[in-house]
Length: 249
Image 1: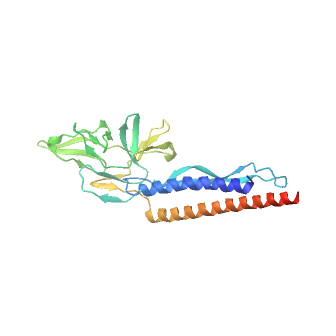
Image 2: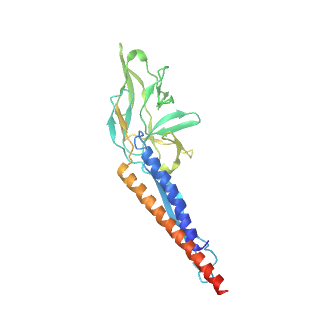
Image 3: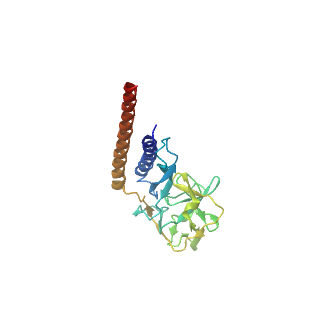
């Protein structure tokens, strides 16, 4: 293969990866608290195919990784007593995963049979003192803007705990774990996000712009088709050159 074919092939590989990322955004447009992802692409110099007159390296398309937009999604009212939305960017709920703490923006919580505030799949939501335990006899809790969870008993207001909301100094310290959750890749502890407000009975929707993503899918498919045509044309030029050399010989 010649330089043009190698460069075009590298671009095709990046476009296929970009297609996967864009399709994943669309698949999660209705996922609570999901954050828009975008493929990071940059040119990378590499050794060209052997061609004596060409001294400069060839620039190949390079997939550098996936970047995420942690901006605020819209808060949608649900009326659920255990649903909580974060009003404020780049802050996360803390939940107790099987292998340590996990972080999420999805506040669709519920209560376990043991009275513990948990995620939809049963992982405990962490508060300032660990698990937040509710008394089912006291009814639905009240969750204040600063995260204090309380219930009304016959003796007055009972404080069950305070939902932990944290923020990382560097969002690059977070690694995607699936189920719309992240884990920390360093031992640096996050700081309490004291400037955010919690909204009971609301859920944060994803920040994916569906129209933009559909448009991007069309652009990716057109770009892939164009690159494929370039590769085919280059292959035809090579075949024609070989045939002419054969006739000349």
